[in-house]
Structures are given as structure tokens and as C-alpha cells.
Image (cartoon, rainbow, N blue to C red):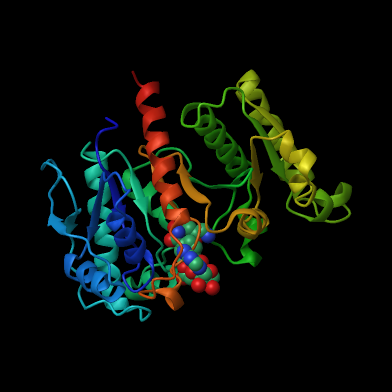
Length: 335
Ligand SMILES: NC(=O)C1=CN([C@@H]2O[C@H](COP(=O)(O)OP(=O)(O)OC[C@H]3O[C@@H](n4cnc5c(N)ncnc54)[C@H](O)[C@@H]3O)[C@@H](O)[C@H]2O)C=CC1
Ligand SMILES: NCC(=O)COP(=O)(O)O
């Protein structure tokens, strides 16, 4: 299982995703084991722009891997990709690359998926369908029965989110007891099975300042989050320790973090701001609750850096390393 390649999607073709894939594949110290799902002509053009030497080999699922260079499953774009200038005409092909990669992973040809950054706006505008991110899209494509959870890992933090890409105004209405329970359950199961952490300690934040200050600063904690945590504690029993709701700022104090394996936050910036402050450029985004391993970078498309050679590859390399570890843990767990 773990000798299989990892499927890699560069993501938005006008962003830095192609740079990261090419720079990694061209690194002499790189052990290989990646297959890119992308337009070979677009990759070749970006390699020329970057001055990166890497031989691209056409690959199909099940075919042997070349001994050097980068195998590519070809998924043609509709238009030539211009670095830093996204084109909605390429949105469908960008998603098609993701679809082909998912198919290869689900069919057992690849051990997992590492994704480069997509622009939600470009995909939504270009396909005329709302696209809120890989996490939900992949869960839908894979027919995941649980609840997909976005977790970012970096520095000494693991941060999982109850809500992801929503307008802030819509967040309180999206936080339901069932959703809190599903996110805690999925996170606990992933920590135990994928991360091999027995009896994980999970700290759950409130939504409001001071976790609602006993109802003086909001009622979501008393009415929704506390009862949900009580229910999931009973369900999980000794398998995981769930604390909360604690105020979102207190959760990130050193003492709280020492006593937690993961912080579950109510909304995107509550969790990702402290994580990026600590670990941006070397953190990894991982989707929990999918039937396959998927990791990604901690950053976006960085159109300002595409083809400049200045995009840092630390997060991408960490995403590859974590995908291998998680795939190996899953393989061990199923023996
Ligand atoms: N995994 C994914 O698919 C993600 C996609 N995005 C998408 O990215 C687009 C742009 O988002 P922004 O908020 O501008 O965030 P961004 O991460 O693309 O850029 C923020 C700042 O960080 C810099 N930066 C980003 N990656 C870097 C790297 N590898 N090395 C050096 N500097 C880097 C950029 O130059 C910019 O100054 C959005 O459309 C969003 O949807 C954002 C986060 C994750
Ligand atoms: N802010 C994280 C992000 O945008 C990545 O989301 P996803 O594409 O992994 O769902």
C-alpha cells in the first residue's frame, strides 16, 4: 500500500501550485513517488518560466512509475494558463483534475491525495456553482458518510473547525448541536485511527467572547454547545476526553494547549489566525472523515508569487510527508 505514489493536484493553474509541484519534483534530494494530475503543457510552460528542469512523463493509473522525472496524468486546460492571471474558463478542467485524482485514489492506484491551492472565487465564478473548498467538495465526490472536518496542523497546534467557508454573519446559525457532535466525533476518530493518539484530549471553544459570559454575551454556549458536548462525551466514553466550551482566546494560552491534543474552533479565523501566526509556511491542512488521505498546503494561490521562484515550498513538503504518515497509519490499522 505505502509503495504507491501520492496523487498531487497543483490546484489553480495561474497560482503557485504548479511551481510547488515542479520545484519539489526537480529537487535532486527528492525521493519521488508523486503523480501530478494536470495539464502537461501548462506544467512545461511554468517549468520554463521558473527555469526548473524536470522531465514530464505521461502516466495512466496502473502503469509503472518512471525512475526519474514527474509522472503526469494529463488533464488539459481549456486555455493556456498565465501566471498570476486566473481564467474562469479553466475552472472546469481544474476540478476535473481533482476528480481524476480522487478516482485514482479510490481505485487504489495512489495512496492518498495532496492538493495545491484553489481559488474559491475563480472556481465558483468559472463553473457558476458555489465552491466552498476542497474539504466539502471531496467529501461529496467520495460519498463520505460522516462529516468532513478541516484540520490544520503546525507548530504545536492542531486546530479543527466546526464551520469553514461561510460569511461571518452566517456562522451562528450554522452551529447546531448535531454539527458540533459530528465534528467532535469525526475529529476524535481521526486522532485515534489516523494519528494513532489513544484517548485524545479535545478542547472545544465557545463562539462568543468569554464563551458567552454565562449568557450575558450570547446564548450559543448554554443552548447549543454545552448540551452537544455532554452528548458526545457520553457517546465517546473513555475513548476521548472532551473539554469545553472554553473562551476562544483562553484556548490558545500555553497551559490550555499543553493539556490538549486538538482545539476545535467554531469558525475559520478563530482557529486559523493563531495557527498561521505560529506556523504559516510550514503547516498542513488535512481533511478528516474522508475514505482516503488528503492533505494540502496552509496557504492560498498567492497569484503575486506565481512563476517568480519565490514561493516557499515548506508547507507543500510537509503536506506530502504527513500524507505518507497518515496513509501508513491507515494501512497498519487495517492489517
Ligand atoms: N488550500 C486551498 O485551496 C486554499 C486556497 N485559498 C485561496 O487562495 C486565494 C488567495 O488567498 P489569500 O487570502 O490571498 O492567501 P494566500 O495564502 O494566497 O496569500 C497570502 C499572503 O501570503 C503569501 N504567500 C502565500 N503562500 C506563500 C508561499 N508558499 N510562500 C511565500 N509566500 C506565500 C502571498 O504572497 C500573500 O502575500 C483565495 O482565493 C482563497 O480561496 C486560501 C487558502 C487555502
Ligand atoms: N482556509 C483554508 C482553505 O481555504 C482550504 O480549504 P480546503 O480547500 O482545504 O477546503
